Length: 190
Image (cartoon, rainbow, N blue to C red):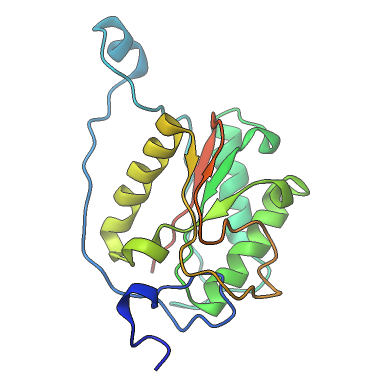
């Protein structure tokens, strides 16, 4: 009954969340070597300075509550990009709206970023567009590029009741203007 209203069904990090909302969508990008793009005078929207990937052999879909695997992946991506955790201005969360994932993710940000996690705005666009599974990563990258270009942190729509175990700044309900230089986007799948 809590998900009868489709517009408000996706509630990542909310205490009343009841799972993710399946969606459709996609985005496409042209990726080019930075020096090559500069040489030809291309308009560069953003730079992917690092990434990392990990596999979790714990369970087919289950997650350990401590967030260790995700935290390790974040640290490797930051190392690859030569970015200090304190340089992250915004985190685009996986934020699927499941209790297990949202709590795992909160723990991972705290492990990976330390105290800086408490000062960093985090939001989930899945609260607005749902979860398009394999395509969501491209939509989230597009949202991050737009956030960087416009200096706006997207909100976590429908976040009205805080979950005490998800105690970071999840940007409830309204976007925020903020100068952004470095954005971390996090995705997971099975």
